[in-house]
Length: 379
Image (cartoon, rainbow, N blue to C red; front, side, top):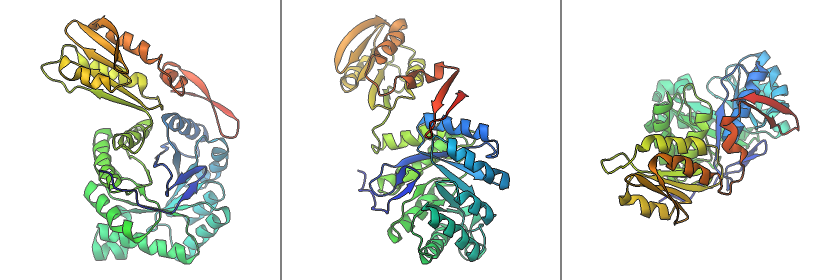
């Protein structure tokens, strides 16, 4: 059973609320050089279409910082600037973006942090204190090692520092590259502060490993009522981070958006080549936001029972299969035709945005930005 969500302070990242009673948001990060404005905006648009709520961009030098103004003006998502080592970049970014992410262990002295905070106070934008096990302050790492205790001590010190500057629009992350330290750190800090938490397992690896690590860590924390926004960190991926993050929320029952596919495990009872059918259904419906339950069942043992609860279902049999809509059989077809018939029936279901089901078939299309401008991108 999911515990009641921990009561946290609500902040705003652009138009997106984080914490309090706001929905748990999902975010990602562009991998382009931010100074490459065209590529960065294209990636932001891709994330927007995938369902991201906000996006983080890296600010490594002054060229990146100067590009933020144009990016912010044309972005389809709220922008978080990722700042390391050079506090002056934080000052430049703070004049433009919707949120700053700083790593307290490497941003500089108290005076430099104070300057960054003052910019954020003037514009009423939040700061994410991003603590990573691999980049802790030297005195904490010497005393505790790269442990959850050291991570929590780092977060508490910097929270107190911001509070002493009369700054309270804070969110916090406590990331390690493994599940156990990540979960322990978040659980240790949660009773001590009421700021919203950004969940993440840092440097989580490729899609396979990152999905498993993130599902394990986020599942443990979210079931405990801990977490207000999250990112699944995948090496070499972009939209997939959003897809996995949203799937975790949906499968935990914390989000109703999107298609839920119920399908049989492979076994000796299956009468059809089921994996290609399930994969085709998953691909065709991946961009749907409306809550829908689809069942693709490979034999008669469980098919009818699962199909009764689905909005649309395939119940496969020997030679022939049924299509069932809301518990009612609406067609019987030869197995080789069942996928085509199912998808035709799926497209007749009411959906919030029919364009979403067609995006992957269109080589280029226009997207409208918040400021009314358009850009043309390719998928």
